[in-house]
Amino acid sequence: MAMDSTTRTELEAAAFRRLLEHLRTRTDVQNIDLMNLAGFCRNCLSNWLKDAADEKGTPMTKDDSREAVYGMPYEEWKAKYQREASPAQMEAMKKSHPGH
Image (cartoon, rainbow, N blue to C red; front, top):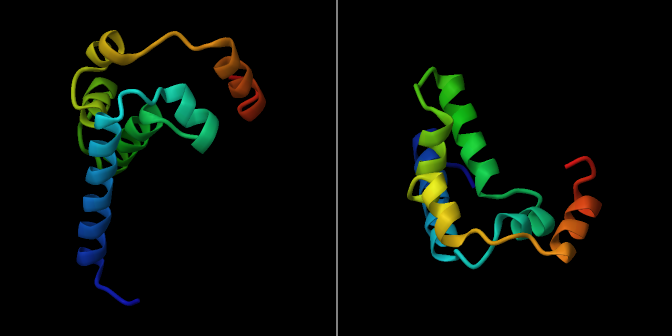
């Protein structure tokens, strides 16, 4: 399917915003679960967003990028929603991401 670059960028941005909204509503899904199943998490998305800003020369701090992904300051999200990882989650993380 052929499309111009502006349309493609707009569609990709819309899909990204929808992914963020989905992750914001699924606070029951922990980052470790995302890492174990998909190989990335909310923090990865925020890092990728900051990397893109850095490549464009757009000022963005790590805290800014995390707030853009989480929809609130990261520390607030952690206090509200993050649970201690279970032994099973930690074991799965060791298997799927050796060295972490």
